[in-house]
Length: 222
Ligand SMILES: Nc1nc2c(ncn2[C@@H]2O[C@H](COP(=O)(O)OP(=O)(O)OP(=O)(O)O)[C@@H](O)[C@H]2O)c(=O)[nH]1
Image (cartoon, rainbow, N blue to C red; front, side):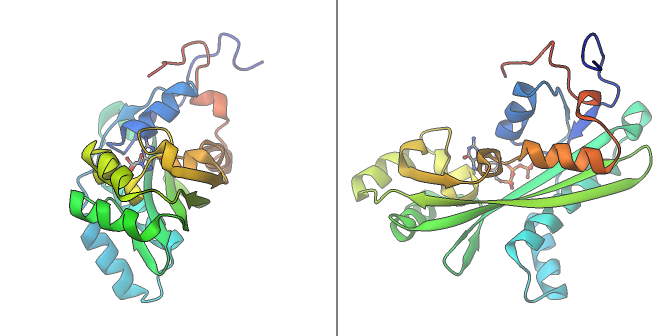
């Protein structure tokens, strides 16, 4: 069995500042090197929409994940320059809108007032580069959500925690927002920010078995 005593042979660079993505990886036995990008996501989105006015949410998160991953990959040097680089991006499609992190209490409140009792789709793009070969692969995954018909008081209380301001769509399914998301159809990791089955598929597409990046003997509770 490759895992018994097997060491990680392909280090992974996580091109993300997301604590949730890091935690998902750590709990699955992957201890990445964290290298957040400084990509201007609004500029990437603007250019992507100029190129494709009918840009789908899946294509948007794909373009954003790729931009973040390429920016980090180009900055790697030394041994890291031969590592695997993973980047992600998440958006919520709700009604005719495609939204990211609210960034303000007012916008988080407005979003919840419009989406309560309704449904939406959380899309996460994944981009994986094998810097050793230069090959990259990508996949977007989507999970459908149904939101509780929360009261104004519940919205105010949730927004006051500050959590919804900094997460895609203004909610979490594993934090203070969990009571307000009634149903998740699809991979929960996709909602949180990283679909691990998609990462496995992308690694296989690059001929990298899962146990080359994960060491189950030392999962970090993280
Ligand atoms: N814990 C948790 N985080 C969530 C959830 N939904 C979205 N997020 C986070 O919301 C953020 C979405 O914004 P992104 O722009 O994709 O990522 P980011 O946090 O800005 O980090 P970068 O990858 O460096 O851009 C990510 O950090 C996700 O992990 C959830 O249900 N639970």
